[in-house]
Length: 503
Image (cartoon, rainbow, N blue to C red; front, side, top):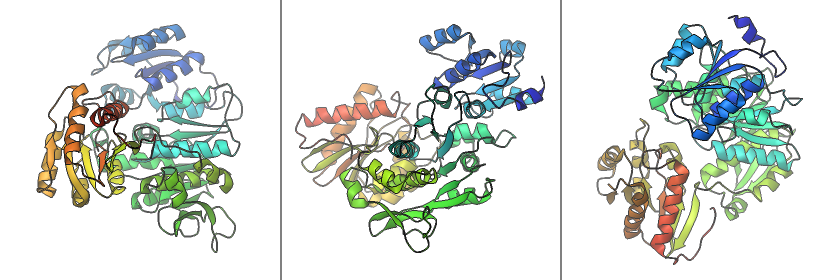
């Protein structure tokens, strides 16, 4: 196999025919890879430990071959297939036996993002890419940025880790001006840390923040940060970073970017020239105007955002980051402002479920790590906190220590309860802490909500912000949030005096 052939595959219209490609994984991303490559005429072998019946049948329909078996060792069928390329789905650990075998055999390993970049010209002039990563806030920022672009009259698609594979967006026959691509640390790792420099060259990029997460996958905090830093490579117009997070600033300083790319900071403090920030409650742009050293452009006010349920500090930060990305792409301040008049947060993101007897019940099930829960807890004055799940190797101690002084009490759920309970014993020994040992999925939230109701007092917020992944007891964070909402409805028995889709 000649690596020269792969090096020449930088267009949908290149010759992909007959290329032997092994695809690892058959989730949404894996299927999009297999579907793309078979359409290109490649010979595709899909390997999956498990696969939904419908998707497994579709693999055969599109003309690929599915090998469904245990992948803890290298299958002989893969060796016999003799792949020229392996495309790995997000989530396959970097030391997975098949990836290790591929590298030892000098077989190129790509992720879906690299493949999408190479074939991005399928329907004509390729869309510009705006790339978004970070420990938290990615999806909100992607949705905001795409909405701002659409408001300005562009054809824009949010895609990537947000739920729509980039390859599906690339192959959409209507074509787009912009892709706003949410990138996980897994995707970035595969894109830039397998001995090669990333080939993606976005118009603008951002790492919103960095806190310990997925350490069980990456192996260390350093490796996780290094993966996130890949987002800035080859950026052409604007590298957007978080002024409150020194790690993101260092990433920009160390990134190899296209000459002329600017560093644009965002934060909740007063911005300097070339930054976005907040002055006397007004969100402003001091980056994309000629007189940025002496003046600023008004985007919105915190008061206006509060009326839309968008005034929590971490949401304001996401808005500023999205505004910076959109402005780098040529969106007017007026279009940015108009977007905020109609934008709403996703379900399970600081969502007001009910208000009863001056107690707010908030669903932030999407707070799946301590960093996200930290932002959520900071938004409320007095909290009954429902916390716990799969901690993914991350300590919760600092989070407990930081917020203990404004907690009314705590209800602990999830598989990793002992770690959570120990953290409260160390840092808040006098706090009321209730353990829900119920293991049946349908009974966890009713019990947690019942116990939270016993603690809560007028003026409190009962906050589901688990700081942990959900797969120990629930299908995903959405399932966890829906069961929480149902339990709140049942607990209050229709007595809530105010409900809203979002806050």
